[in-house]
Length: 373
Image (cartoon, rainbow, N blue to C red; front, side):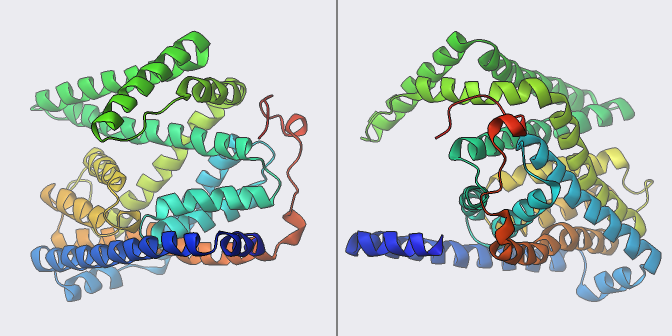
């Protein structure tokens, strides 16, 4: 695989070098900006909320039983997403899903614009195991759609719960209703695309016209063929979704709930009680902080997520030092630990030769019937 990349670079010659240099420069600038931004955020957090001695004192209060419980819940949180990937990738084993998920997560968390790099690594790993581009794309797209639906739905759920719990939640309830309506609209459009090929073509052609109009303003070449691409994608998705949408939905919700549980347990074992910050308020802060990761300011949202969580939970009534300690503990378990695990799984992928070209055929995997590329 590495040899193929090197050969392609040699054949492209100077053209490849000319393209690669600006890319490296851009990545360097992104890394420097991310680092400066990250340092500024943590300087602000430690100056505004609590100093390191207070945070360390709070962390030292943990018992071994609490540490083991946190670690066990963290491991379960990792495994839950492996299950999602197995459901969305017919033929993949749980162990392979773990290697794939942790290796790509490590990349996404560790490097600037890591999300795009992680997608490329996903294709590379699945290809090495014998999965075609169409099957890999199906897995990436379906898991992405289900994750985004749950990620968008969680703030709506949290706002609705807070509105029902509190007497002065009228504004929150309105926001929840509006958000719920928007989410239901998105789900309805998705369902109609799967139900009707004619509707799918109309949606694709309209999006194509809008995109082409925007590109003309920018003096760029208009786009074409979106209707064919969307209908082809629809055919690949429909079989998988028809058979597995319940399992996929349940597994995705469990995965997101497990991540939230790690944060909630971190707060509770470090002294932030339900009387200080209720579970529904923790859910709301958690949900909105996760939405910030859509803005790729730093790899994996590091710094941005911490600031959002600490500010939201402290304003909710939690002790500053305990909140900072809990958030840092949560991020070590769910951000730093996956990077370390991912380094090991990446090495395992490179060395596990028995997995090469091991993907079962479509019929044996129970995958959707469709043309492979």
